[in-house]
Length: 351
View 1 (tube, rainbow, N blue to C red):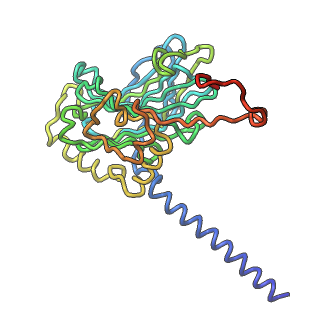
View 2: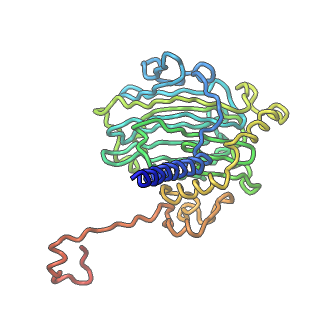
View 3: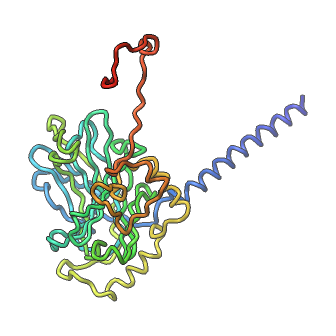
């Protein structure tokens, strides 16, 4: 019996060790992809100012000033803006989206200089598009340079989680050579600058915005489902605010290279500035599973692909000429249809 108990204990010990080893391996593999970036967060008053809605009480700051609540009601939406312009940088926020019926509602976290360069503005967007009951939020990313809104570089995605249940981090990296969009430290999109892009690559200092507003005319099914204020107020929370880059005074619209040299070097050396092999695999996996539209595959709008488009054959076959992903509809045949053959259906009939 003693020998049996000893061997039994050994088996238990080895089992525990094996479980621990698996846990360590899994954690080590996942940490290289999803480990939190080494960034410092700001209080609201350290980097931002109210933009609109605060006069109606629709912009609510927490007591410690580390988080902000935006509200949309039938009277107004709300938003905030960075106190400075930035020439390149890393901009990030943890966001929780409104729940329930949100058709027509738009939450946006983006960079822009449209208030200064009205005809030649640059812009980098995360846009969150609400939906009807039972349908999930959708995310859209955009890249505009030098007023190139007629050449929209949009992509749209589904999510693997419910963005209304808890906070998730959304980040934009913008450097002289590349743009990367992140969700929870996983890159979902990369735009690499090329000479062929010319002025279409964002190059002028931008402010950082967060807004919640009524997009009834376009946000859900092209405007078919407007905002229903029976479900108001719509609430979105922002926390873990990050502004890292070369700060510019709004009056100084075009910085000299020397002004941002130190900031650019620091930005390039940061862990989020490089897509490691592990992160690239995670990005490709995300795009394969969740991307539902890409301008790179939209041959109806753009018969010739944009110079920065990296057309991947295995990815290309998943998309229609409209740029939308192919949807496979699986019809469930009823028991009756399996048992009773169809009668009198000519070639012109449809089920």
